[in-house]
Length: 122
Image (cartoon, rainbow, N blue to C red; front, side, top):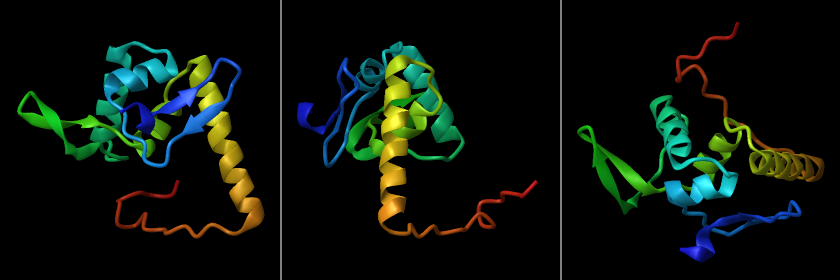
């Protein structure tokens, strides 16, 4: 799956394929963190209902629950904002640059359905 990965070079260049699919080990390598740390963040993100993985490419069973083997860009972005590593910082800056450049060109339509998510405004 080499062509479906995100690459962060030592000089800070970020390369993202059109359709990202990475397993936990690849995500851990991407951010320079331990496998166990990446897995804990993924499980926490899934439990919070932020995003999930790709169940179409198989999965594994842990404690009576099936977890996907591969995760897409949404999960990797969520992990990037939880992890404190040099490569996570580079990736966060890349994400911010992409968002700012898009906002500068056109408006982004946001769908607000926070009421359905049981969120409250404090």
